Image (cartoon, rainbow, N blue to C red):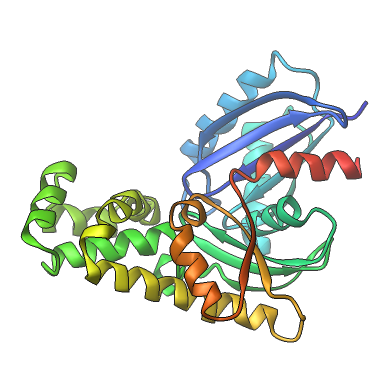
Length: 286
């Protein structure tokens, strides 16, 4: 019996599962890891925490790591280096992007178009085995339309520019201890600003019913995601449905749905987290 360890990491959390072809054996969760944004100490602490849990589990025969920041060879090489250094007792991992994890979880072995809407955003055309084309995944500076980071940025920008009603400004200030200095120093001086920005997406959702300004901004954000990431991938495929994963797809479903409907598209499904369905994919191929 071959047991496999799956690790799926976004910017905020990393979920892992040890499974056999028949069942889940162990599972857990640690802080999200990124080959470029997370330091060696963070990788060491998290991998050692996973190792400590695995001591009480059946042996690991193979490792599959899916993560943000792993679309390039350099990112994949860094992940392998961290595993070799901090988890040498584990088999060498197969490393791939979290976008492939989403595609395999959402579509299994069928072709389709998939989107990730979490801390970051991404989209891909999947042929049932591999990603054949993708859009998005540019990070919070160059893109990430529809992401938690961009949505959080909408709220913070509106707060900083005092574009919200006074009572919302005051509530945000009191609830989140917001100030111009705090926001600017945190965004520009912390190791993972996208994670900081994304934590304000729930607050944005909370205040949406009270602000037509925010409603317009959010609608435009998902429209941009559809225009820049989805329509180019769907062109010429004959497909009109998109499968999604990620907390933002769940929390802002009505805005996402409206943006797609305006463009003749539909949501096929939304699953979150993707790991349970990813386990099923690997069980089928093992």
